[in-house]
Length: 258
Ligand code: XBP
Ligand code: MG
Image 1 (cartoon, rainbow, N blue to C red):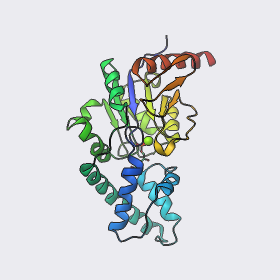
Image 2 (image 1 turned 90 degrees about the horizontal axis):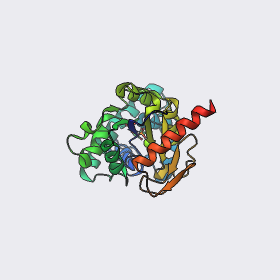
Image 3 (image 1 turned 90 degrees about the vertical axis):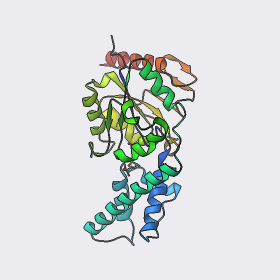
């Protein structure tokens, strides 16, 4: 008998909401402007930068390629840290003025899982304050109580695709990898969860609309979109019983393949 699904572990940026293009990118540009810097990240340039997980790491990569950024590494790091700090302050202010909506189906699937007795967790590369800024409006002041484990950049400094954040989530949930499913939007996210041995459902985000989803259980355009997986009937949306069935089938198939 394959392990029953006991937890859904949620990525944040791109999966719970489209925060990259309209949130972090805009906030980075506000930070550049506030420091009198002429740099601005376009929607397209940010797509390339997203190959690097972590806002600070992304900044450092961009600064290293700019002729007009400080040449001395320690100065570049100090500038990146200050810009990142300001970006996070701008992000919080942006969320407070005009919240970014959660992606369709997110709250529904969270609720379905919880009603079936499963627990929810968060495994993200971003910082805790950014998660709070996003979730406090739709979930209320007690947002964190919905989650049995919340692992952010502060606890897991090795960013995705490193599996650390998912390994820590499992530790906190006291679960084996085959007892959870991760919901992700990016190739780095899939690699991180799979590296921890966790099956992944890919809900492609705007920036990763072409992601093939190699290694994922199934791929969908969103949790309220039609989803197909080999061996079970298509579903009009990702709902809890469908996900449980897919998870069970996949575990059995993986076992047969060993
Ligand atoms: C996505 C990221 C983050 C955000 C920005 O995180 O890579 O770096 O772009 O957040 P995930 P920070 O998909 O794992 O939620 O600036 O706080 O890093
Ligand atoms: Mg993501």
